Length: 365
Ligand SMILES: *Cc1c(COP(=O)(O)O)cnc(C)c1O
Image (cartoon, rainbow, N blue to C red; front, side, top):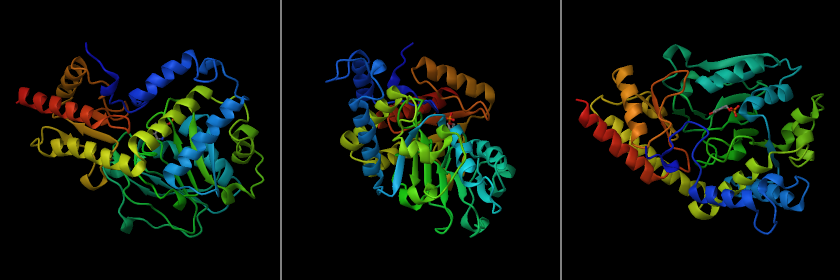
């Protein structure tokens, strides 16, 4: 079996740039200029303070984010944010928060919000099997809502919003875990953005939260310190021992995005080209490959598709794996097939997969 990291189409944790993996390997032995292993450096060292400062600065630069936002590096994954958001913004409130129910991951956020306060599902795609996203005429955003929460890219179903939703006078909260820094996102129109690292940005263990200061400034929450945005912000993401390894790798990925790729606009051009390669192939396959998402809502990150039968899908997966392509199975919740083409997956790798898919179709009349 000839498997290569560059052919890892997994939905997450995702592929990382080769140059980053090489630097991490070296840093596990000895961080340049420090003389210690990355795994044994104090989180109270000047070196680590500089790592956090540069990671923050790089994210600000990539998104054009002003000083009125905190950039937090937290633990607990996106799942902890499903709770931390309503704990902070909904507890004790009488006005409901509005949530969009557009797929697997947004549905995980709903019960956590209900636990904390009034919550209203503003739209649900359940009745159409989460094969499309809402159009504006189906949405009624309340001016009184505590906030609006949605997921920008539904990783499992392969659905991605191509516009910013909601009203400018209601705080927007967005889970961007699977498309963060993959394209420009008008970050300053959001009051809070969260994204764990392990899809597009680094290894599991760190979650980025960008939060507008005014959203949390006057809140006198009674939360455990670990779960308080204010406490975490005042501690500069160093409240307790942070995941130094995950944060360092994330820093290297932000450097790669800035210096090797040239920023999120350039990343977006590459990502569009990758997605067009695969969707073009699906559309030209005479129904052999069947795209799951409605064409107007197709994700640039996760290309979910089916074959005629489950048996054929199993054969596809086995032959793909033997040819070196890994991670192409759909999420366990819905099955089928899915090619995740996160930032670090190269256009060349996508073209190689497309070649394999065309060949597979020729062999399966
Ligand atoms: C993968 C994923 C999650 C789950 O994140 P954890 O870090 O495992 O809690 C949440 N939201 C989205 C959009 C995801 O893709």
